[in-house]
Amino acid sequence: MTNAQAPLRLWRGQTVHQRSTPFRHRFRYGLSLIDLDIDALDEANRQAWLFSVDRPNLFSFNRHDHGSKDGDSLRKWAEPIFAKAGIEIAASRLRLITFARHAFYKFAPISLWLAYDQKGAIQGVIYEVHNTFGETHLYVAATSESDQFHRHDAAKAFHVSPFFDVSGRYQFTLRQSEATLRLIVATYLDGCQTHVATIQVKEHKATSLSFIGLALSRPLSSLGVTLAIHWQALKLWVRGAKYRGKPGLPSAAVSVASKNSINAIRETAA
Image 1 (cartoon, one colour):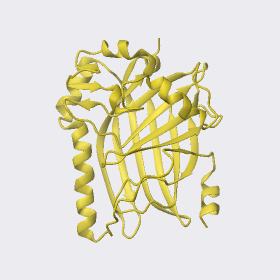
Image 2 (cartoon, rainbow, N blue to C red; image 1 turned 30 degrees about the vertical axis):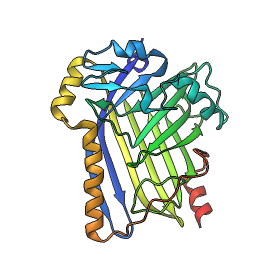
Image 3 (spheres, one colour; image 1 turned 90 degrees about the vertical axis):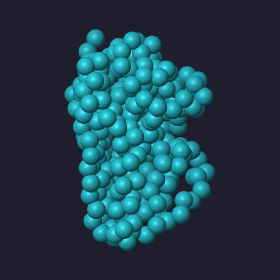
Image 4 (tube, rainbow, N blue to C red; image 1 turned 120 degrees about the vertical axis):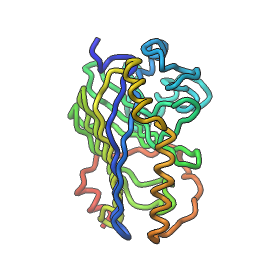
């Protein structure tokens, strides 16, 4: 078994956010993600003594944080979501890349559900997006023929920031190899890029020693993500960014993304 097939993997790196309007604002911070084989959660539970599934630990994963959030089968939940993009995953390997629950707390701004075919190529992805109000929206897409580079776009449908309207389009760019993962989510409005968020991480074996190192280097971990979001929001407000009230939820909980290129996005928005 290669490390890419391990029940539990650890990714460490950084995220960078940059807005272009009405003024330039950029920040970065370190982050860590766990990568789970959804069909091997019992094995993941035994892989490192500082990590547990569905029970408290220094780091953990809880089924109730994702999917239907009722503890039901995550694969059963994911199958009809992928089907909306024309993807059949009954025979696929399904992995979830997300933020770990750290002690008592978890907040995952974005999680990736990746379905792999029998050859190990990504055939589809669900972007599970959460905002700080406890709400969720899903963007699902079939991937391109390439096994490492995927680009697609969707209309922005979900409120994630009080300083941006729910308008424009997202362009998702996903690149993955066995040892690296890079995700770019760019927002376009009227043909211009208004915001871009990047996650760039490298693979680490998920061992007890790795989790000890993570606890020592990033003691706030998931809580730190939430604190960083609110700290950056405060700085935007002080600089004069316009605050917008939270709209209602979109009529549909799932958006299907297409494989349009960046040129197609600009032409559509113009």
